[in-house]
Image (cartoon, rainbow over all chains, first blue to last red; front, side, top):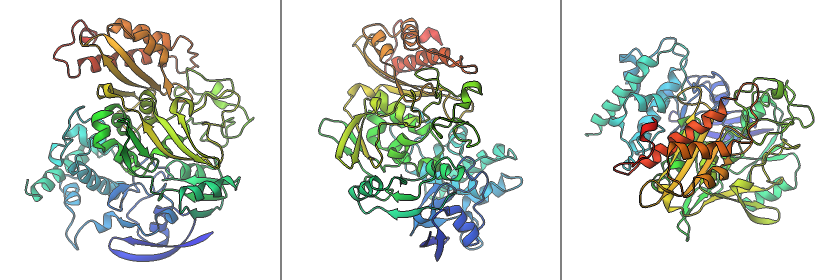
Amino acid sequence: METEIRLRVDGQAYEVTVDTRTTVLDALRERLGITSPKKGCDHGQCGSCTVLLDGRRATTCLALAVSYDGAEITTAEGLGEGEELHPVQQAFVDHDALQCGYCTPGQVCSAVGVLREAAQGWPSAVTEVGAEGGISPEALDHDEIAERMSGNLCRCGAYVNIVPAVAAAAEATAEGAGR
Amino acid sequence: MKPFRYERAADAAGAVATVAAHPGAAFLGAGTNLVDHLKLGITSPDLLVDVSRLPMDQVEERADGGLRIGANVRNADLAAHPAVRTRYPVLSQALLSGASGQLRNLATTGGNLLQRTRCAYFQDPSSPCNKRDPGSGCAALEGWTRYHAVLGASSHCVAVHPSDMAVAMTALGAVVVTLGPDGERRVPLTEFHRLPGDAPHRDTVLRHGELITGVELPALPFATRSRYRKVRDRASYAFALVSVAVALDLEDDGRTVREARIALGGIAHKPWRAERAEAALRGLPATEESCRTAAEAETADAHPLRDNAFKVPLVHNTLVAVVRDLVGQGAPEAPGGLEGSR
């Protein structure tokens, strides 16, 4: 069964006809030719398909496209402004936070989501119990970043540079916000 | 994946009527478990009725001082909700220890309760499995059972329920609110999931076409002193080997247990309310010895399998650790308590 859906991806509007079985990931990659979200496991276990879906980081391999008709999606391709990289992307470059790069678009989208969540004070599983005020991006230490980024696997094992890259991006974000 | 029709529900009653009238229909929430099962061939509905946009997405105060959580409240939003964090911290912690950030942003409260076991044999359609294919047998009985049940299992199924959220809600005395063809009903969470018996294909007491609309948490003032601890094979983003949720009501002396609410995860076909342990602790000082005795009472009927005998002492040790943390919480000193047991 086929259905027409509308998606807005990286600022551009699309109308596309999809089989009801199509995931958001397959709609992006196979129908719209937007290949920065990667298909790693296709079972929600690796995080390489992570995008910002209506502003929040989300896996796209387990989301049916027909259910997200009208959604606003930002992929790693749409994070920057023209030629200028997003601060998280720049931090990944500066810290050499990748080897093969396959997981990287998902990693940077996830990291952008992590910073937004921390800015809203969202706790994580390692946030101190009773921290009433929650957390802020500049308070994200190694354990917080490792926990919050645990849904993005890197088979090259670049974590040792990914965590500092996210920390640097968090600092840059905090400074950029005048804090 | 087999083809299916898709309908977006306009309202809950309409969704219920559609699914109830159609034997091959299923509700679709965020799909983080269902879509995986469609890919794996574990289930093949011919109609999906999408309830994910129904306005069941609020956390509301109840007149009794508890909360009503809409079935579409996302796991991430529930974990971060100020009322949950301050009044039911065990629930926030349990949610945050499940899945990953990008899955919690999608996954719903109702869907979390209905997620199915991660038993490797259940998820592999080439293996016999009474839960997936009734009457085909159970590959786990003679298989790799590190992640399987030690309590309440049967000769037909030894799978465990995977949810963390449900374990915390079980300790808190939550009630599941559903809408079915015959109207609304309220099911205590302890009676919502089933033990496998001879019908492990039925995870819950829901009837076909019955939709979860919300979860009610009763007022439980002492749940401010509550905690969830999950033990797993890696530090994050893994299912539980064992998990323990405890809410503790202490007498004014700061060490005697007035009341305890305890639930266990990773050890049974359903979130396991540990009423024996609760009864054993009542009125006693919360020492390592009393906690260990209570945990042993709870696991007295345990039947470990080839690879999971470690879960029994792990339950004991984890309960001791959680109670120790709770006795220490917010008290300047924990007299004669568990400090020495570290």
